[in-house]
Amino acid sequence: LRGRDGRDGEDGLDGSPGPRGPPGREGETGVQGPPGPRGLGGAVYTRWGKTTCPDTEGTELVYAGRIGGSVYNQLGGGSNHLCMPDDPDYSSYTPGVQGASPIHGAEFETLISHPGIRGPLSSFHDQNIPCAVCSTAARVQALMIPAKTQCPSSWTLEYSGYLMSNYREHHRTTFECVDGNPDTVPGQAANTDGDVLYHTEATCNGLSCPPYDPEKELTCVVCTK
Image (cartoon, rainbow, N blue to C red):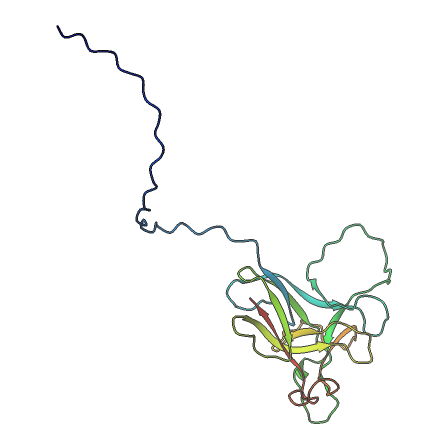
């Protein structure tokens, strides 16, 4: 007689892994995702001589005001120029004029002494000068280049103008690129000589002439990237 089937035996041990198979075919490119949030980068610069910012893409006005600085013939104060807002805020204060470090509005000094010669911006002589602080969210670098009217390739032109600073016998201030088509502060055309801006010229002392010309006012350009 045939006996009954025996019980199933226990599972054997796992065998070693086999060799790795070849990679599969590359899948199709997926659908492009939505744009990410705008980054936190950007550049900020001051447009000296204007109340508005350029119409370049991504440039917007932060605030407008007028140029302020220390009076030209005093030793103290600051050497830089400020874009003073038209609507100042104040905190606690001491009543009365203290006079320790006064800030004056800036005016053009562009009327030259040669009879019959009209230089750049001469029609703006003694006019007070406005300013605008501008932000470029799409570009993160800002650069002022003296003695140029165009930006390098791959850079965006924000504005161009004339390089201006204080008179050679006055106390030193910073050089500023003042817009070549400036605005002025209405009702501020008196010759008050607070902070003053003059044209600059190159000399041949250490600068090659040509290409520099000591008889021509220096230009400037502000660029972003």
